[in-house]
Amino acid sequence: MLLEKERSLIVDYGKRLLASGLTVGTGGNLSVFDRASGYVAISPSGLDYENTQPEDIVIVDMKGVIVDGQRRPSSEFAMHSGMYEKRPDINAVVHTHSAFATTLACLECSLPAVHYLIGFAGKEVKCAPYATFGTQELADSACRTIGEDKAVLLAHHGLLTAGADIGEAFMVAEQVEYCAELYWRARAIGKPDVIPDSEMNRIIDKFNDYGRA
Ligand SMILES: [Zn+2]
Image 1: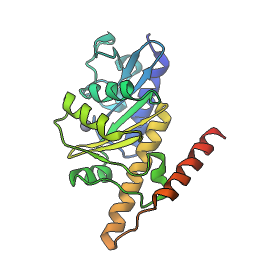
Image 2 (image 1 turned 45 degrees about the vertical axis):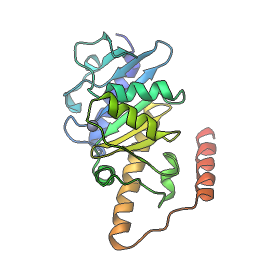
Image 3 (image 1 turned 120 degrees about the horizontal axis):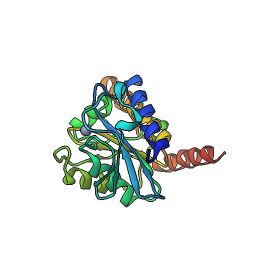
């Protein structure tokens, strides 16, 4: 079976998306890019994570042509492949509609640095202008807005996160959702200050050192 390891990772992290409350039902999608072959392993369209098996994962080339698999790839493939094209440091993408991050996205509101853990994603998480789900326009909007960050909100839709591997992309999704909840709570009872740029640079450097240690 082509990209067996990558297929298993997607099955495993799909279940983790459910267990962590980052998605419900068939919501969201995830992929891993194998740069050696140029193929993407991506979750299938409309299949719930509990019942997904490695053979259900779809292998597609960067144009979206199915190389191996019986199912249809996620309708958001363009958003995933766009990230891999634009960012040589990115080999995995997670997309969810997690409640707190999506609440901010419904307000077309970026997530500012009110807690240091946002540093796993960048100095803030920007919100990409709205486009219809499953379109090239949405992929373009997300890819333009994310810049060099590892997360981007999608207006009136959800969250996209990226990483060097699926473990990182998933961790960033968890941290962004946590920071979005903290921001929502903080705004409910006060007006939180934002961590200054210079301090965020320091935090991000420390995270990078930690990653290499
Ligand atoms: Zn979506």
